[in-house]
Image (cartoon, rainbow, N blue to C red; front, side, top):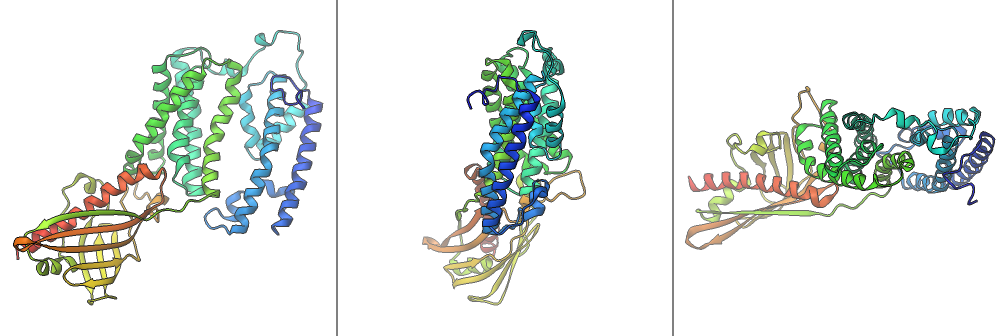
Length: 452
C-alpha cells in the first residue's frame, strides 16, 4: 500500500489500467448499494447526469440531500486514490501534474484515463531533473510573461466557480466571497513564482490583479452589477491578498509539487460551495433601530406615521446609485388587520397591521418584499439571484414616546433576515442601508409633523 501511494513513483500503464478498473468496479457497486437504500435509480450513466437535472439543486427533498451526501462522502477515498494514481502515471509520461484537473471533468476524465492507459512510458535513463516538463515550457520565465499567464490561468477558472455558486447552486456565501478570491490569489502567485521565487510585493500584486480582473469580467458578462461588486470588493481583495501572501511562502517548496498544489487549489472553491449547499444554515432574525426627536405631540406625529405623502427625490449617494428607497406610504383601513403599503423605488412592501396602539405603537408584519436594489449595469437588465429572497424584511414598527415640552421621540425598527455569508461582513452593509432608509422616512415624518 505504501508503494502504491508514493506520489513520486512512476506507474506503468498496465498497473494503472487494472487499478482504475478495479476501483471503478468497487465504487460503482457501492453506489448502487447506497442508491437501493434510498430508493433511487442508479446506473452506469448516472455519473454523467448533471446534478441540477438529476435532483434539482434549488428544491431537494431531505432524502435526495442525504443520498447525494452519502455518495460524496463515499467518493472521497476513491477520489484520493484516483488523484495519486493519475499523478504517478503523469509523472511516468513526463507530463505536467496539473493535468490531474481533468480527472474531475465529465467525459474528459474518460479520455484522460484511456490516454494514460494506452501511451507507453518513455525510457527512464535520464536523471529526473533533466526530463522535459510541459508546464515548465508552458509558463514563461520572464517576470512579465509569468505574471500575464498567471492571470490567464486563474481568472477563467475563478469565473467558472462564480457561475457555479451563483447560477447553478445559488449560494452567496463563503465559497464565492472567501474561497474563490483566496484560491484565485493563491493560484496566481503559484504560477507567477513557478520558475523562481518572486518578491512578496510581486506575488501579492498578481493576486490582487487577478481578483480585480475577475471582478471586471463578472461585470462584463452580466453575472453581477456594479453595486454588489463594490460591496464585495473589500472582502474579495482581503482574501485575494491573503492568497498572494500564502503563495509567496509556498514558492520556497520544491517546484515539482506546484502542479498538484494548483489542482488542489482550484478544487477548494467548488468544494466549499458544495458544502454550503449540502449543509444550509439557519439565518437569525436581525434588528435595526433608528430614532429621531420631533417637535410635535405624538397625536400629530401618528397621523404622518400611518401614511405619508410622497418623499422628495433622494439626495443620498447610496440611493442614487440604485439601492431601493421609500417613496410614499398609504393604508387601507385602520386598526389591526389594516393593510399598509410602503412603496419603494423597486416596488411595494405589503405590511398587515398587527398592533394599532394609537398614538404609541404601530407594529406590522411584512408579507411581500420588493427587490432591495436596481443593479447598475450597461446592459438593459441584470437580475442576479441574490436580488430575490436574500435580504428579507420580516417585521417592522414605529414607536412614539412622549417627551417634555410637546416633543416626541419617534423610533423605527426593522426585523430582517440576511441569506449572505460571511454574515458579519454583509450585516455591516445591510444594517447601514436599513438605517439610511429609516432616517429618510423619519426625517420626512418629522418635517410633515412640524409644519402642520
